Length: 416
Image (cartoon, rainbow, N blue to C red; front, side, top):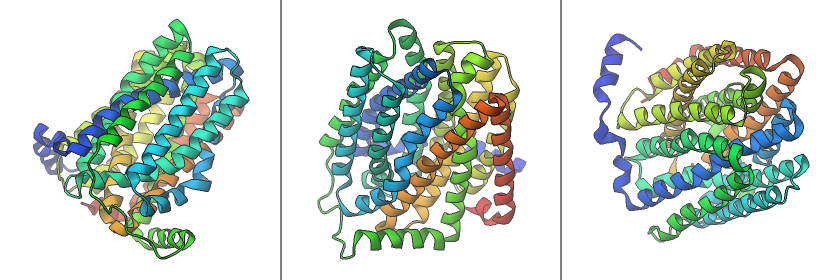
């Protein structure tokens, strides 16, 4: 960004813009319900990763669990987008959130009874992935139902604020809880936390007739969604950037439990701090975007994030001092939020309303579908060549591909 653009960036940051979406009652309910629920989710994610590593002592197995969790995205997430265009999204979210709560309680019971095994974790991760395949498109498409188009970018940024507030606090609490009383309580707290978002959804007042009846088959609707995405040059480019980031960028986080032990010489608490540092950075990034209000340089900020993120991951792979590792991870959190938040906001701005669920289903597939492939890839590479080499390789590939996108599609930087 040029110096004049940086000055404009500074001038546009305003606290009065940061929480503008909270003036909508439905979104306020969603905000607080999700904040509680995602706190529990991150406690479970952190505890589960370390439990898997304790049971197997295998970086590759961390990749297997991530792959199992994301595999259902390939089979069900595009159809989840079709359903999100056909039924009331609140009803669909109530079903998926209740299913996730039940799976958390099953995992807690297995852990309390001390009979949890790696294959059971993989099975539960796969079932959780099925629920998420229907939840994610509905969750993305539900945002305009709560706030409308005017506050859409702010609401997406605040959604990330919720997610990353939980990411900043949940893993650190999970690390301490795991060390003191074991993983079962982390899973139990996650199960209970779903009650908050279920209650919030139940209390919302939404307009009747939220969905229009479709006269075509589900598969015709699905084909229409894919044709629209592949036929729209800018949406296609934005989704390609998410594929690159999911496959070669954020997948390095799968290795953090092993990194905490093998590279930094730590334990479950160290793993919690590493996970939380990413969350702190992402929270900062989301708050920056929210505070900008209705700004018109989203494309430039997105492009900046796509270069800074892999460079910081490269730096992280070379650091061996925990405080500096945490500082670099905070930076990666800021940069990756610039990518994911702004790509999401731009896609939602460009898409036609009647195709929103399907397009967000495809968008969600690029994130949740390629994350497990990236997890399997980097886990296997770490097992064969070591964690440092795997992280270096992935970050380098992402940097090259993001450079290619920026050069071949200069219009991306001009998006408002």
